[in-house]
Image 1 (tube, rainbow, N blue to C red):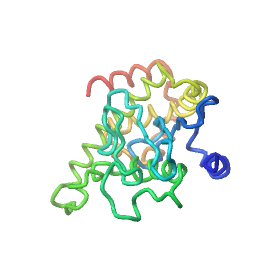
Image 2 (image 1 turned 180 degrees about the vertical axis):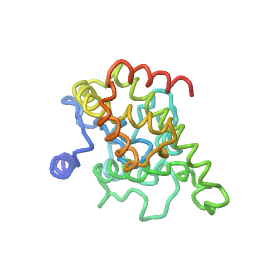
Image 3 (image 1 turned 135 degrees about the horizontal axis):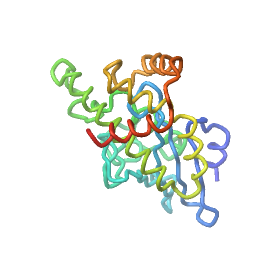
Image 4 (image 1 turned 60 degrees about the vertical axis):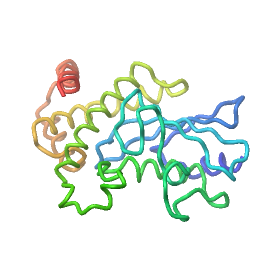
Length: 229
């Protein structure tokens, strides 16, 4: 299939795809949250199914939410609202185009446009209002809540990693664990605002320089942070 060739050649290293040997109409994608967003260092999973008349019709997409809604475009029931897959309003250039649109475009759009630095403004009615009216304060609060839900999603993934992604989940959070916990501490202490990658990086370096204990103490802090909110 043309889609597989495109993904094999152009898929960024922050997105992973698994296909099903006996069901070429299905795939599952894992998308890493970008630095500078409240989704940073998280993994977000999407199940994708190709309809029988694909590419004339867009793919069906379901988000593995674990019951959390942490983005206006991603519902707790797994529904994904996006113009590109015709589940939300949009102009012609934003909607699915059988001749040009691809799964790669869809995945990159989710990573860059949905899991962005200010998800509060993904809500259409808020996106058109002046920020001084709706307030960056509400956006900051939304981002804080989003980061907490992202961390809870991480715990769900560690307990029940999606089939075929077990090694990815384990290695990803093993590699990024200290940075995630350090970001929690930075946000909790007020050192920086949720999603400000550069400030968090400085805080991480400070903690590493002071040789802060990274195992039991951080794990306890993580749990207390998550469930005291």
